[in-house]
Length: 383
Image (cartoon, rainbow, N blue to C red; front, side, top):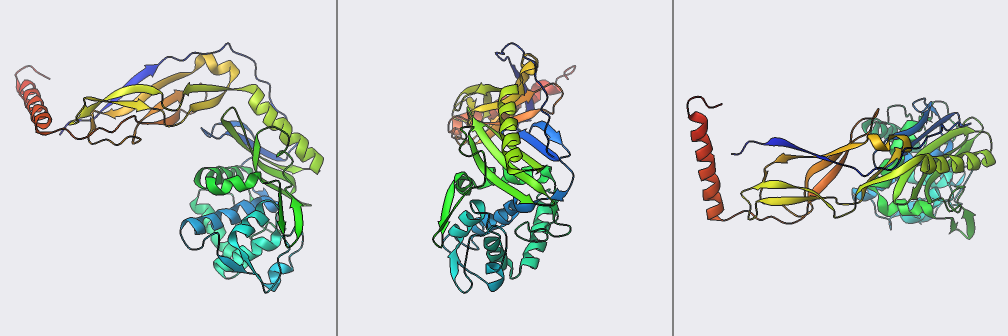
């Protein structure tokens, strides 16, 4: 067999002139915003502190439901029974009626757009039997997902002692929903939904401001204040953020808008490769062709402080030679980007073509090459 060796290639970057980045001062009790592509934190304030969540914790209820659909336990067409407890829920409601059934797909809309506390109870009872058991399962699953500062006492975020999540955990959860469930994430951009003859508007204040916002969830209680888990895309670059503990709907709207504008204004989108661009080639072992191209599966880009652009470095890494057969799109290596003061960021590089295993002659030539190498290594004075 061949011996793998790490192959490092340094790639020069075309960089713009530096600029100055001003800090963002937020009125929120807790806040965090990250570049979704890399997870790089652009701003953080009390982000790891567990706090009351209000309706923002409905994202965990949705995540549990999305997982149940992915695992084949239910489908979007499955009808869930509505209990008297669900119908009696106060606060924001979808207006479901006891004794009827509601399709799972409608409940998803009812939770996302209408922030239905009643819809959350319907989901909890149908997935776990009781809301208390569902809350226990949610908390356990949150810990498995690495949401260490999360304790869920109910499915809706209704005020209850000990029902808390940190902004950092809410942000991690939002990013998982965006990444793992794109088919359902599209629902978060919905601006209104009608159920039982009642049309309600999405409470997300950013959706219609032309900022590229497309999610996710607002929240408000007297204890938690006003909060928002949000996301926005501009020029193909996504940011995800959490704000909590604000004093009013106006303050929430103003702070959210200002935070998104700051992120896209103070940080530059740096594109290293376009989708399909070749970053380099790797040697192939026992293949019909001796090399394989390493390409970007998607646009490889990230947000970077403008004053750091001239200090970026990037390299291509892979373990080679790579043994055939190789499938087009197979992950073979990575583009590693170094930003001063930050952890290295890794982007996958994939095979640009199918490489079949070579025939008899290829294998014979490879065996002969290995034999020659072994003979050389055995000669006196050779390392």
